[in-house]
Structure formats: structure tokens, C-alpha cells
Length: 95
Image 1 (tube, rainbow, N blue to C red):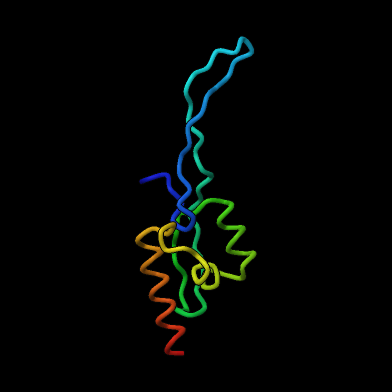
Image 2: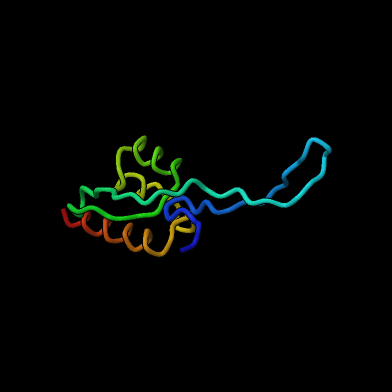
């Protein structure tokens, strides 16, 4: 399972551990990923996604998964989220 947020595309970053003696060794900064179920009002069902904690706060701030995906850029979304976005847009267009 990759360590990439499905909604924002956040992934691991690299940097240095710096000791008191200023010795530097490589390290990785991993995103805070959580497995969550988000409810889509347009589809009327819940969707399981692996997203970062900051993405979860953004989804709440924007008013739900449907509104988040409407504003989201396609190049940041995973294939699963992109398919979900198209499904939601189609459901909203017919409603």
C-alpha cells in the first residue's frame, strides 16, 4: 500500500536528522494517513479512502466529499478518487 493521500496527493518527503553535533543523516517524513469512510450525498453511500489528516479537515471545511471533489484538481487525485469525482458529477447532473 503506497503512502500517498488519495485526495491531495501528499506523499513522503525526505530530509535530515540533525544531531547536537550537527551530524546529518537522511530520514523520511511520512504523511499522517488515515483510513476513513466518507459519505457522498449525491451517490447516497459511503466511500472508503486513505487520506491525510489535513485532507480530512479540508473535506469538513468545504462541506463534504462532494464539494471537495468539485473543487479538487484532477492531477492531484488518485485514480480511485478521479473515478469517484466523475461518478458524483454525473449523479449531480442527472438530479
